[in-house]
Amino acid sequence: MYRRADAPETAHADVLAVCARAPRAVVCGESALALHELVDDIPAAVHIAVPRGSRRPTISCPPTVVAQYAARTFDLGVERFEAAPGETVPLYGAARSVVDAMRHRGRLGETLALSALGRHLRRSGRGGVGELQHLARELDALSVVRPAVEAVLA
Image (spheres, rainbow, N blue to C red):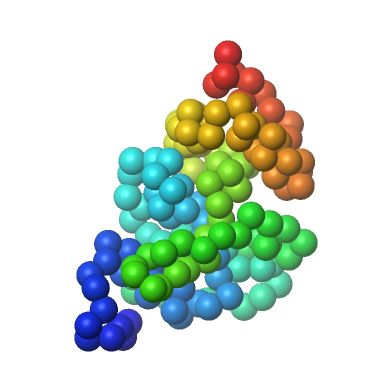
């Protein structure tokens, strides 16, 4: 990846490189959880999502995992993250990332999903529950998210 010679160092060079090669992609999954500091693990690959039906980018370096999300909800919860001074990348917000982790807990791991949920709820307080439930409803995941939220808050 090419950057200006005077560009400051960044810990997120891999994310910048992937997003430069896949401009329509959104950082998701473990990568989004890590950027929101909802998990302690550093992902082995950059996780991105593209709309279902679109071309999946082929990126070998840095290691990249590409998911396809429903076009209807693809833009739901997208934010910008400053990966380096003046350089932003699209990523799913903390609440959307937690809901996605709960939806894909079989692939990501139940422990990781519940840990991210607990950390998010501690940060956002009870006010964050409404946003989680709204996103879970939009993503057809309320039946998974609601009991997990109730268990964490109990």
